[in-house]
Image (cartoon, rainbow, N blue to C red; front, side, top):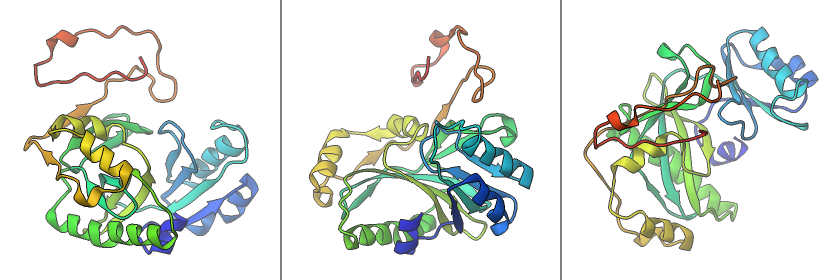
Length: 261
C-alpha cells in the first residue's frame, strides 16, 4: 500500500494498525462498511468487510487477542470500502516490462448470492465479463506504467508473476485492492485452460529480464469457467473425510483440479 502511494497508483484510503489498543482508538477513521485486511498470508481468510463496529472489533480481537492467525506481532490494514466489480489482472514482470495474461474474475464468498464469508476463491471465469478495451487502457496508464517506473526509481528489480487485484468502481475507474507476487488461485485454473502454445519461453524471458523481446501470448477464443466444490462447513471448519465421486461423468472439455484432498 505504501509503495502504491509513492507510485501514485489509485488505491483505497487506508490506515495501518499494529496493536488492538491502537485499533480501538482509531477505528472511526474510515466509514462503514470498511475493509479489514491482515498484513500477510491467511489462506484466503484474512479479509473482512465489516458493516458495524462490533464486526470490526471481533476481527481485531481474533488477530491480536485470540491470535487466530499466528503469534504477534501482527499488522492490520483498515481500508475504505470501494463498491464495484472485481477484475484479476495477472502478468509477467521483469522489472522493466510487463506482459499481461488474459483477464479473469474470481468470486470469493462461499454461499450463493455472495452471502457467505470471504474465502481464497470459490470459482473464476476467464475472460472477465468486466474487462473492456477502455478498462485495459486505464489499467496500463494508471497502474502498470507507474508501477514499472517506481520499481526502477527505487532500484528494485522484480522478476516474476504480478497478480493485481482490481476493483472497478461505478464510474469505470480501476483501483488496486492488492498485489500478489505469484499466480492467483482460482484464476489461474481458468487462465491455463485458455492458453495456447508454450508457457515456458515467457517464463524464461521473465527470469532473464528479456520480456521486451518475448513472443506474444495467444488465447483460445472461448470462455473458461472454474467452480470449486468444497466440503460442508468450509472455510471455517470443513468436514473431513467425505468421498469424492462422479468424476467420470464430466465431458472431455472439462479438467478436474484437486486441492486440499
